[in-house]
Length: 113
Length: 109
Image (tube, rainbow over all chains, first blue to last red; front, side):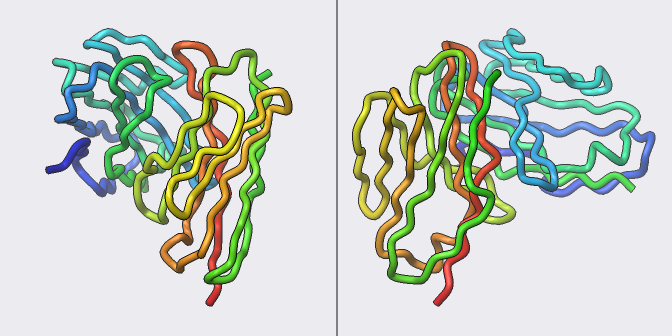
């Protein structure tokens, strides 16, 4: 059984489009995250939700909007996509706070043309 | 400021031993994680140290010295499948996990 799943795995789109990435975890965890990993492989936290409440909101363009309908789901919507948004986006979850062991989804490779 | 340093890349031979170092400077410290990430895949948890000393888990061991702001990951009996990036991450307080840029380990036959 997949613990943390993301869809889609690959996303190729044109500049200016709006797209969403979905994430679901079946671990019963309270906290979920979105990370961006660029071509240099640096993992950068974007957002974190604990029980549907936003607890980490790093300096990210407001074109990126997370939504957590329940504690098992955290979606990421991106408006007006730009070339620089091309990266791998990882969803993760942990039992309690963000400093607990985190379990990652398989990643979504976003390519903006 | 917050800073985590790891070598960018290391090369080792199959069957050998390699040590990947991580030094950190953070405003707080509440534990250090090591994650493994194979190319094109997600990071996976390897180890967690919060007290000084060595934690052994099969072929992998992780060491921590809080006074020196230093940790290492020791991989023994290297196998080709150990070729991956190894990420060091520090728990800084309750709500922060600071990530290093990762060390790419290349294993040669």
